[in-house]
Length: 207
Image (tube, rainbow, N blue to C red; front, side, top):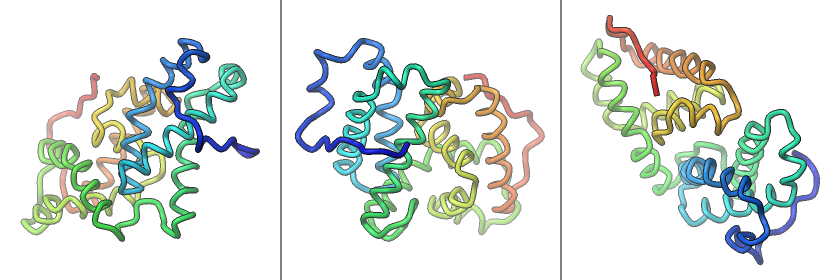
């Protein structure tokens, strides 16, 4: 992922419509929303997220023939995108998942709402104070931020952004079974950290 990357400032992804093959646009359709929402969560700005995502796809367009020969092009694209998100944050003097601006806080509350619903149906609370922390949303995200990078990504894509297990696996360039296993472990880890206990009903993940 090292090496010179073209400056896309004078172009847009749509300007390549007539020159890129259909497979590229299928690839773009698969990743665009995931990358945009993931970037918005971290950057706290929809406009900044859109610019970063478009710039990344423009770069991927320049190496599309080589990308198709890679053993895991999806994994490469996802890793490259995340590297650019972190680079943008570093340029702003910020860290991933920072809570230093209001826009970020609002984005996190919106993104974690589906996870809150999932936790309500999957786990029971031992003490009332955990309910308040969970309802606040930021408490849940603080625990998410302590997960491994893969666990965090899967929870954001699968639960917060609503992608299916299959879609999450395609986006991250991994197996569906891996998504299921990592997601289950991540949710259990958060539940334990927050003082929750698992219900006696089996967890399912059929999407």
